[in-house]
Length: 385
Image (cartoon, rainbow, N blue to C red):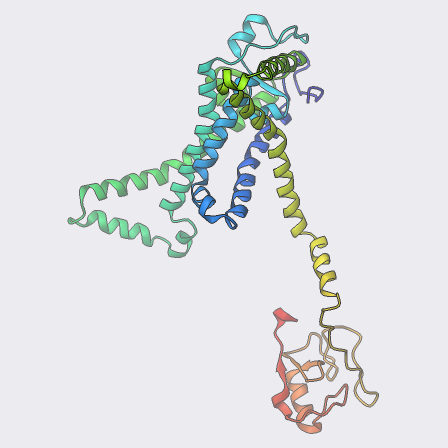
């Protein structure tokens, strides 16, 4: 990722392009449905253990990302998605003091302070969780898909409750707050996405150092990681491993060993979670592609498959079958008017088939006898032809 071009950042080799920043945002958006899909699959096998987690998926995912993001912010100075694309967060005050924009970075950046980590967690984990909950609340208050069916019925019921003297003050207050939320929340969502879009455009043209308003509020910039950043992390990791590998290290410092193992597991998520996303997308593509249908068709054509019935050939004494599809063999009308099938399988106009069967008692194409007359005629519908 260090070699990707950045529009408008020729003077700063460590300024990432907007495409890198948008890519890591998209990766962050794909994590939640991937985790939810895996939990839903395994909850069918172990409902007693996982059903409660699936029902409270938003809280579980927020707690999971709190642990993951906290680790990456403390160890790498960036979120999980940012670190996946080789990015980090650096304080603007620190950059101004050392003039970070020089193309040569002789030392690794200063780690984020405890306050910056907490503020970043509020934006990375807290803000999406609150937005998700507000989205669900808005769907409930607005009626969701049912509002398009019921129309203003819910509004009329609430108005009647407000005008009813028997309605409690608490209930009236709840109705007014609900209506206020329904009017205000779409405006807040517009400002939320509109501000992000405005900052993205300004960042693209080099008018701001931040690609989101939240980073501007925190005073943090996103930069590309340098080789010194990677070297500093791996030196620290090797030093920690050498200490834990000493004899009786588990007895002397059990918390340190557990912390190291936990860090290794979270570091493995850098490989596991993207792989789960790609695998999830592959399954979506596979089950919606022709390969899956072809495989099922191939299985049906095995030894146990029931062969289709053979087509009855036309009799030389009967009428000729038209070469154009959806054409009545008797009157040559295209398309067939009120299509009706005979026991032989051939389709005619209803009036043509009825009069021919009543007069001749046989199929006009195959000359197969129709014993029950018009009772053997079968109506065909256009959506199944």
